[in-house]
Image 1: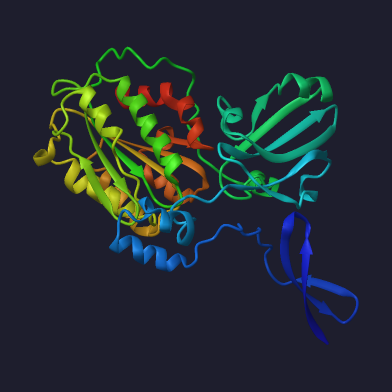
Image 2: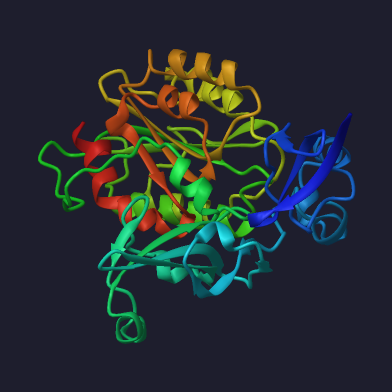
Length: 371
């Protein structure tokens, strides 16, 4: 006699199990993580609407109701055990975060004793963390209360502070020693193309932070025909050039343009963006200089919708660009894609959130200008 049972186990997961007779249980499926309560009325319809109406997410009637998740306006949800637990897998309660909060897991350790706190925290707490689990001393109150080391892991997708997820995540991370952003002994006369993800999973707030980080890069450069020149590709359902290498000749105008790049939302077609960078941006017609090194900087928050074509286009792009740098933000990472995007592992940056981008600026500038 065989019966199927639906069981709820720790961490809010649902597991289907098979009962054989009355004595044995054999799990027949993989545990699933909980689903966010913030969902679109019809995800496929939102995609179709965005194709007909590229500025869909600028319309509050869609972005705040029908297509809230598609437009990146869902509040973050995290596992929540603010009182320390001995086993993080025992934490099966969840909470909805406020604006400017992210998911965290705190590991409190002392003399063979371990406790865990799972919660929402202000994003500012993650600034300055090293990649992955970062060693922190904790706040003064934490030190007084626990008298032990505090390790904090931050992430910014729903329920990503699952300890099981954090300990099984595999990443390739650039860990160069601290360096200054300049000056650069050979100048920085590069042709630089920024490829910026503006898909629905990024969300408007993160998209603006990405633009702000590009401004920080531009501030380190001398812009002009005899120095560095830049172009920008934004991509989601479609890839489109915001400006070409030979269109903006001054830093002032470049910073103004960066302040007016629209957020679109949509799916993630990284392959189209890489192809556009190769076939349009890095051509003599649009300002590519034959005697200047090409640098392409790709920002992405996770998997593309066509992984095989993305890998193929990444290989093609490296034939025309001296350096391809990938900056991967968040937790939705495909390792094969991550490794294929960049020139090599030293050209890969894996950060937990858009708030952490500032921490990689010195190393990034060294690669852009000295590689």
